[in-house]
Image (cartoon, rainbow, N blue to C red; front, top):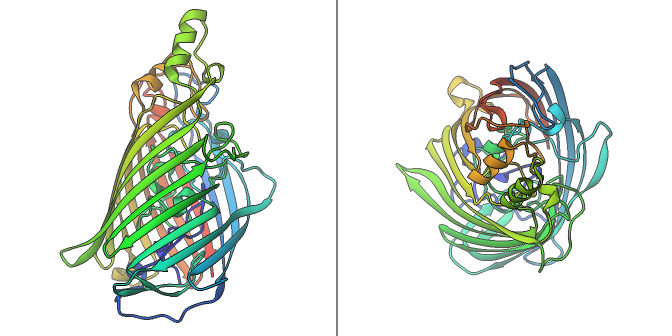
Length: 450
């Protein structure tokens, strides 16, 4: 069964996470009184292939990290096995071996909202096998009503108290725990663009595949959840090797979640705050040095000490009917320091809808439409306008305008365990540059899970 509340995600590209309280969007209305048989272990599998084609586009000029003006093709492939068992009462242990390969568009540069959430920064044409996750989850019940947890990847079926504490520690993705959303959190089954599937300005700690090591604590209290977590950062921006000094270089986040009903339909609101501390460059320092030397600013020349980056995010999801849901996100980062582990977005808003195909006799199909608008801080804009380069973007100059993205898809169920998706993205002002684009990207995605 395919449950959207598993919040599968790669980029970090996670396969499933924590508790599925109900899968009403795909399986109909769920009831808190329903019970499920507890699992002592499970094995789940997924594979996802994404093929993309970018059409040619116009540009007044191009730089080192510009999106190519030529027609391009790209692909990515991931396969994950999720193994879980209960070592003792309330305990769960999971390990996920994963394989990935891929060739990105324009060497994964030229956009703030990159087009394929399945494309890790460490992707290459050779298939690589690695451990994606190895973590322990411990749950302590604290009374109240009980609710069902469905069997899913990195999730054992059973009953849990609505009032409980949950401790998770080990190797996983920050997005396995934070910034969930029923309608736009999983590039394997939902929207593909990086700035739609999560907060665009959430520079969360993770290696080049999006995974890290850390610890989180969650407190569930009926309709409320508070979660806090700390994860280690990569040693260098957007690189694979992690810095294990948890008390020196880290990413902290805290999230408050509230579940509600509106006109008889379920919804959730989440408020996120994050704070990163690591060895980062400041854009103003690079600009100051460039003013002295007469050269173009270079963040690599001023990465000399620890800096702090912080930000906020608001996340909304709401069912309109049992078959239609809407979502919206807004996020902001201070934008004083370089992007360290996600993508080059300092402000972002996104919204859209996901519709189940039951209304036209295709209950396992879905159609989605989303919009995103991404922006940069003033210091980040000046850095790029004076010829600086970030990890993902840099055209050698900049006539700034917010990057705007429209994405739509149809997800067609082939059988119980397989789906094929047609996706289209239209991007205006790629990399925030009004002198380039717009550009269109078409996608064919094949996904299977069981």
